Image 1 (cartoon, rainbow over the protein chains, first blue to last red):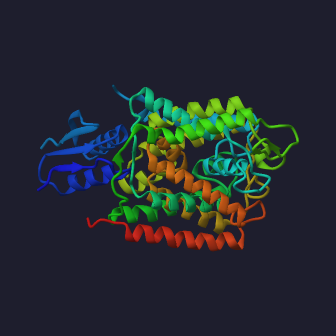
Image 2 (image 1 turned 90 degrees about the vertical axis):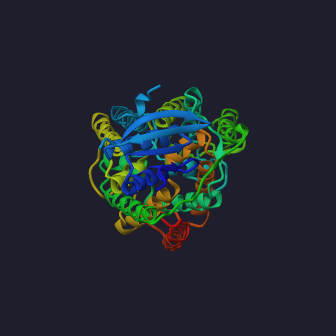
Image 3 (image 1 turned 60 degrees about the horizontal axis):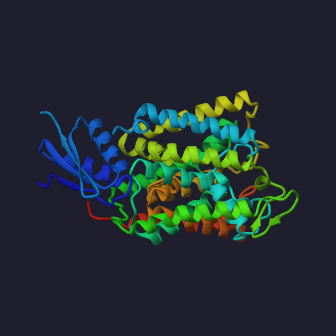
Length: 73
Length: 360
């Protein structure tokens, strides 16, 4: 099972769609999402929160962000 | 740093400010129920450059210049200015083209659809229903895996091209200012009658454009995204911004006595409900496939998205075609040629949605 969503370079709303799809399909409680814009970062975190997932850690990585999403079991 | 404007309160505030400023622009001289219309104003700019010769809709609208430059300044100040391109530019061009054709059949983009309703123009309800229908079709494509692919990072100078073009337009305008009762000043065309002749003072239009450009860049305000996210994700975040804009525009119109309820004799509008609906189905579908309303495409162009800039250029060419070939509606209604173009646009967007997808 792949728990990394690489949404770098994708325009709205693809990063959210991919994150939602992974949230739906995964049986893990942690997902890493890579995005390249602040808008995508905000959208992914907001959508995840809406599904009960929290952004555990957000860090800048070469010209983008790595977002670690976690769901408390 | 926390981006206050992208919170729920932030987007509500930005929507509210846009609603008030749009109504005020009408009070200060812009056409009725058209304080801001991204499609109409891009079309007016196309006319000002002589790329179409419909004499009543030619003016270098400073609001549009302000939208791009305001977004550029905000993005730059908050370190969000990023040069990127390469996500199916020709497709985005075609989507911009047909979005404009659809919007000009209705006579307004989603921004103006809201402002028309806030001014009492009930014809706009059919436009908004069409818009929602078009967006709904778009979300089906999105759910089936429609995706224009990734953009990539590129040279900073690439991202500066569109803001520089807009700055150039402003300079051209300052050197070729409007002359009373003259339809041409230097290289620019100016309407002396019709909607193009109705304009708020240049500095007010530019100033408001800059403010909205900056606020919208920070808040990610998007009229299409508002409805799309509601349908696709059941999320109301952007939608509350749109509602907020409608409410404050409505209240401001009441205060300024700009509210006039009804279907008949509405300014720059027609009563052919089916084409008001149909035009906006096309526009809504094209915006959804391109990932943003026409305002959002301008803001993205300002923050360095070269693909959004290509969409805007598609709108310019669409506006040229719409008026050179009689596709745009008028107060008398939609045209036969416009309806043919509508079918071609729906077919084209449908093919784009069907064929450009990854297996999910």
